[in-house]
Length: 156
Image (cartoon, rainbow, N blue to C red; front, side, top):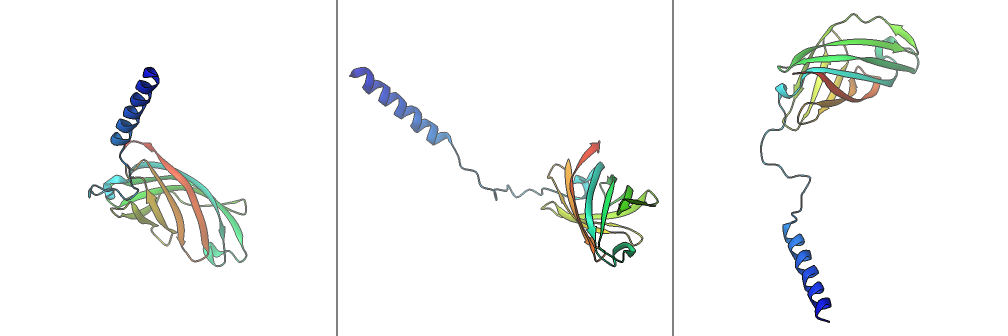
C-alpha cells in the first residue's frame, strides 16, 4: 500500500508542476513591436497562378482563363520590378519585362502593389519575416485571381 500511495503522490506532484509551467498563448498576443515595414519586402520572389478574366479586363470579350508566372523584385523602399509570362486561354500574351511596380506595406503585414503604366493591382499579405507573400488581384475590373504563396528565393 505504501508504494501505491507514493506513486499517487509522485504523479500528482508531477502533474501539478506540469500544469503550473504551461502558459496559454493567444492569437492576438503582440509585444507592441511593428511587424512589417517596406524593408520587410525585399529580394526576389517567385510567383505563379491562374485566374478568371471577366470582360472588360485586359480586353477580353468573354469569360477567359488566365495564367501568369514570373518573379517580383522588391527593393525594400516601396518600388520594384515584375518579370512575367502571361497567357489567356492558353495563348501567350506578349508582356515586356521588366515592369516597374510600387508597393505599400502596413505594420500588420498587409499592403498593395501596383504594376505601373496601367498594369494590374493587387492586395498583398506578407509573412512578418518577409520570406513569403501572397496576393489577390483587385484591378482592373474583371481580373479575378489569387496567387499561391510566393517565396523569397534571393537574399535581401
